[in-house]
Image 1: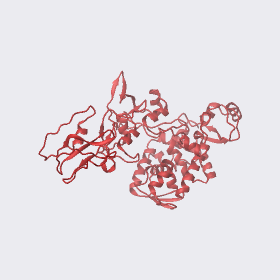
Image 2: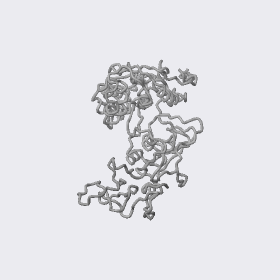
Image 3: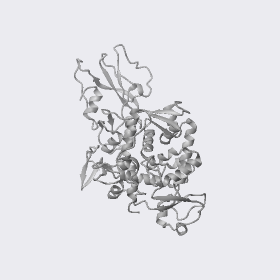
Image 4: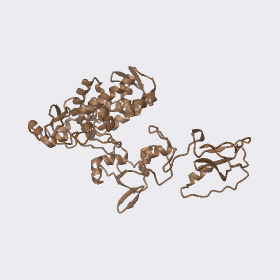
Length: 497
């Protein structure tokens, strides 16, 4: 019977190689959601990605069958809609010790500060973020608290990713207390990704799993050896399903739920397995690399190339780097698939790239640029004054090494000052910080003076009069600096390369 078990889990649409279809209307947490065609296409794309590899899809299905009964029980006790159980699949793929690039840990991906706010213990002996019962109760409390502000479970869901304050600023008072909503292409991406998980898994997770777990309470002070003897379960297996405990004995400060597993889910059940694409795909990141003694480097940082059929587990082993460190180095979550031929960092990316500028190409995003040049995404956001949720468009030029100048209307420190014919500068007026001091030169309405910064004040650069194409005075010179590029010089003087 055990031999045939893997074949039996190919259930639902995945069994026949066809993804579940996103409906025009669906129910979520008591709300009726109308899915517009543009959003349906986006969600369907995620559903297809989640179900396209039966092996990996069904590993998640088995974990859901094991852990969902525990989550459902907790949510019923907390009076939280059970639909939120799919959020654990989205957040961690139900891996207890999953760690994100931002150091969020466990089934529900709590950071330590948030975990402690919802009553979870996180220290050298216990990390309740890895305890399915404790973490699910903490997630329920957090979601209910967010829903208190909106009386709308969709916004509570969105708050789980961006915080209640962020949602308040984003949506205002729209749909507060509503019982129906429209989902469009403008709906927050996290909500649409959740709906994709619900559609993909809801018809596949019914029935019993290969592994069933029961909660054993009131075992404070007992050791793993004592629990193993009482339950006839091997110590190693008990530890595998209770990674939240780092000590040898169950603490006595409060009651902890110890999971007792029954059954066998195979070697991949508790291991993060990220699928690679089956078809040969040209790497999205065309990275310039330096080979030194058969080692690849980007921006002076060692990288490793994904081989055909390689998983996250195997590449971290080959690269001799821990899973958590690998995710942090590459600023990825555990659900981001590896792609054959692409490069991933074995050490932390730098704050600055070697190159000055880069123009976004079609299909590229901030992560691809960060990987290409070995620079952290937060640096790119800072240099270019971008919001992390902004979708980049092709043709946009990114600053990779220094902060991007902004227009004078936004408080520029290196603004281009344009003078009209009748304008003049009052030299007797006190100069405040960021005031443009214009060197008096003969200018027309087609001429500009370039302002630079000296001792914290903005001042015009003498002898750098910008001449337009039809100007009568062509003699303009520029002294080249080591940081100059053709683009930066051309941009400085308002001419083409």
